[in-house]
Length: 179
Image (cartoon, rainbow, N blue to C red):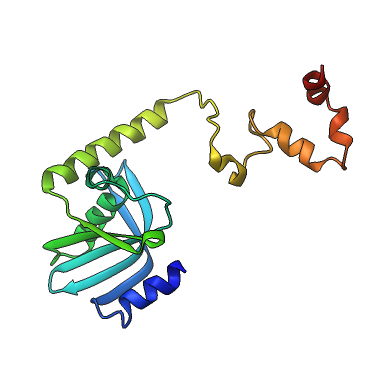
């Protein structure tokens, strides 16, 4: 339904020149190249001379507020990469397509907001690099994680899932729960 709604709304897709789909970007956050990022823009569009749009497609079950959009680091970093790649970029629009709602949300960043995101991202990188302990944090995403078999919170579930039917009842954890 989401794809059909999207197609019907935007057909014939003449909103500008698509420069790339899943367009790889590389960005250095500092002049020395210590803080570097890579990402992929879902769709990059030249909407007119010097006007670029960074499109991102979301399947979220909720719509963000304008405040939430302003805090979005991902598209702000993409904007920085587009500015560096295209010297003629004078206007860059950030566009989110919330497919479940058939909604298109647009935002732009001031130079001050871009600089704030840049500094915050550098700070976040420093924090991550200085961190020595990474305690597990369980969430709804755990079931899709590739590291469940070594995760202190999930590895027992992986082990139990691999057991033949009713064998899990003999596990120490099951006996403890039964007790």
